[in-house]
Image 1: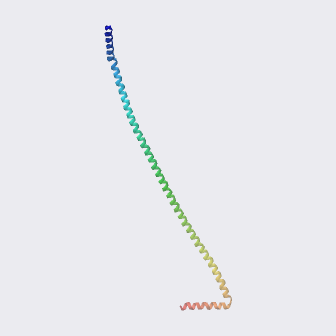
Image 2: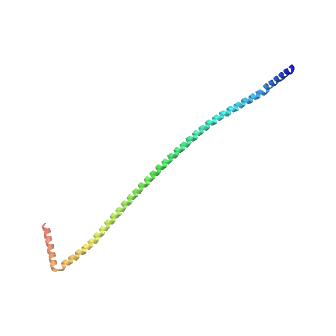
Image 3: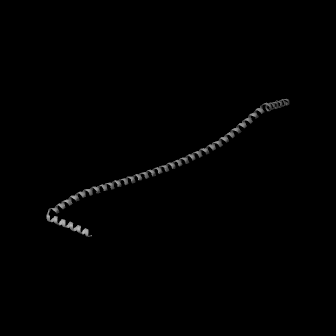
Length: 161
């Protein structure tokens, strides 16, 4: 029995030696390799997380810049629209003023033409009326004599002055 226990212990020690000599080094190498791969994956994951955070920050900044640009473009467009509306209003007011002046000028010209026409017509009627009055006055001899006397009297008064 002791010999069996010794044989089992020797066999066990041989198995341990074989395991330690031929199995443990490859297992140790594999374990170290696996640890390195895990450490590398953890590092890659950390770097990926940092890149993700940086990308998210860049995205937020880009969105904010885009919103600011959109707001600026909107404000510029409103200012341009207001400026254009003001220019159009100003041009319309100038056009209204020009048309008003032109209308006033046409009205003055028409008024002056009417006045000229009325004077010419009135002058013609006045001349005709005066000639009728003179004919009536000069038809009678007594009226002729009085008219000539009045004319001479007026001449003498104007000479004496």
